[in-house]
Length: 116
Image (cartoon, rainbow, N blue to C red; front, side, top):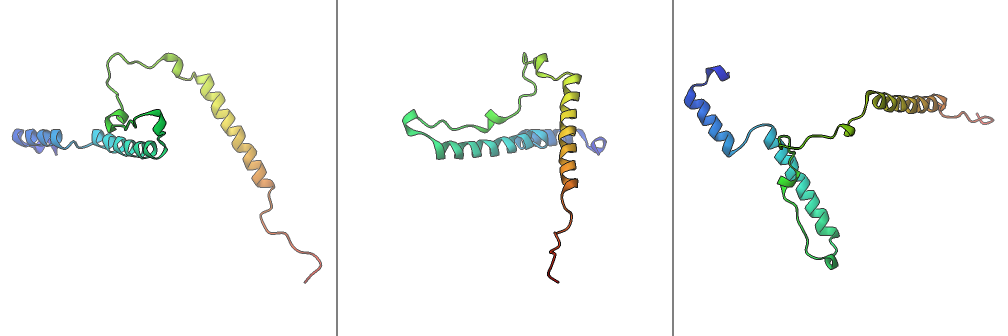
């Protein structure tokens, strides 16, 4: 479809996108706006007036910053393959224990003896 657009049409869509963005940025902003609103409601409800002025948040504070220059994740923040393996094995062991407990539970209600 993009190959069927003329140059002026493409320029029009680019201008429209600058005014009202389409796509991922807009979705991120919607979520950031929601988080900011919820945070502000919580801050307003539980604000301690003795601690001073209420500081409300802005949606831009919750926008992901994927392209900030100079910010690189620290290598130690990543798990090694061995750590990931141990974590998954722990999850599997816990799930197996849960399944064993479930297997030992009755699957039907107890039968009353004596009265018929």
